[in-house]
Image 1 (cartoon, rainbow, N blue to C red):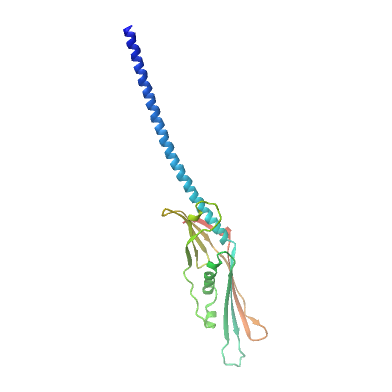
Image 2 (tube, rainbow, N blue to C red):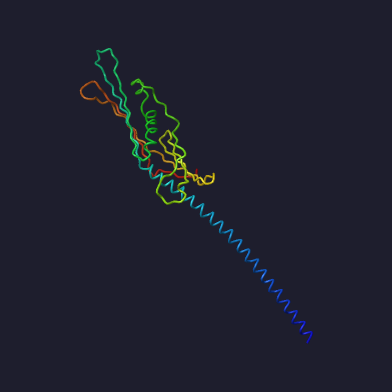
Length: 233
């Protein structure tokens, strides 16, 4: 009987040890699972924030592309010559007038530099000389920096998107976008809009019945969405 009692006690001790081992294994497995779950939760949160940044920049690019594409810039230069009768010794007089228009919402920014390009690139230098005016020189492109996106969109990070607008000498418009967050720039993107440019120069036409003759130079530039190129910046 004593021997049987000792065996019974021995079996109980072994059962307790096995139970403790099983409990230890469960605790270890649970801790590992919680650690993995916590790491995954942090990773998923980061991925969600990164996705929001990407969507904000993409929305800004599409918004500005929609405002710039389908717009037209038109400009016209008229050189008027007042020819005197052949028996007069006085030289003929010339008058040069330049006008332009831009039909987009960015008219306050783009009309003036576009006209400057037209004056220097399209209007013949001799027209300026005939009118007694200095021939204008085109700048190396006009850039507007530090711009923000203004919209009623509910995109949460759209207000953190910054962009800049540049007009190249060949009438190409380049816009650069990025999202600023804690001093970092995310998803830099470049939108390039080449211009379709048409130019015409008329033959001198008599104005009325007098000795006034007019020559006209016209230019039209258009930016089409089909030609837009979006790439990493």
